[in-house]
Length: 470
Image 1 (tube, helix red, strand yellow):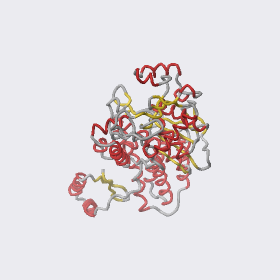
Image 2 (cartoon, rainbow, N blue to C red):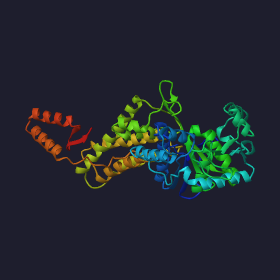
Image 3 (cartoon, rainbow, N blue to C red):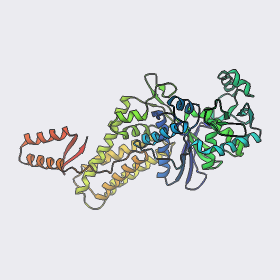
Image 4 (cartoon, helix red, strand yellow):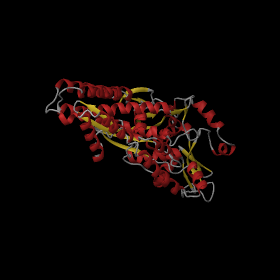
């Protein structure tokens, strides 16, 4: 199996540090607002990666944090006249409410930064003791230049980064820092009403970058398999995590760095972000779409490193493609009622070949597009087999189970659910069957139209009339 490591910009063989176990950390949202679909893209991408590892038989220790203290949190809480913890509670609950319909499974651990303040203070003190950090007017800064290969993950020229950093600083911050590239690991309180904690450097709060270093190493150890997040986090966030963590522990922080691409919008395919004001929240979108699985399918079936162009046109196409898969599944499932015992060896061999192609694609840096082609192959096989005069139950079940399982890796489920029993619908179908048998086609058409108005689709097959909701 190979994954693309952002640190080396190459696909590398992936071998977990521990047999049958994978430790993975993914940066979660800052909980001052509802998540937008760019945030959801990262959650879905790494949930899909986690599911594939589990499909391969690994136990995945998956940690994804909530940033519940930073400037945005403080400013938003003030604007809403509530406390920072109240704001965090509100939007952490909203995160779970919005990601559940998208089938994003909760992480093994989802820590909050504010629950780890003692560990953060100890971590910062250790950096100070080692000479990697220094106190200045109540702030504590990390000496970026002291860390060898600082910025390696970003693949940027250090001199250029230093120039850009200097351009973003005001005179007061320049005076507090030894070097423009230095970054805060602890921030002094600016006002008396600002949420803060007592520390060796006075009242203050942690910097953003230090939070993830502490939570990652606390739950996964000093050295673990995979760290993930959006590509925009490679610098400065993940770059600074590496510098902090390796300076403290003296160990390699992470073996493989995986980053998902942006969600883009508009004709210019501009990155979606809250700072640009061009975002759509998942909370709002879920009120507008009939089937959340379409959004999950749309995002999970684009290779995680590629950008996703979010548009009504692309969502409509995703809905059509998902319905194509569901229809093929239903067509074959209907044949279980008249299937003979046994199996069809030739068809089962084709199933095995398609599953092998799926695994081959996913083993190549989670190439979901090629993996989806194998699923479409299963659906085509399902449709062909469903048209056979006689079918074997074990083969029918095999095809159905593989479609369910492989789509489950993408996080798209519900295939095995039966249509809700509805005696009124069935009574009308029975009446229509009788009308057709008596060549009363006018009444047959009336019943079809009546059911269609209720959102019920009828399909006349050689094995009888079947129905499903539109």
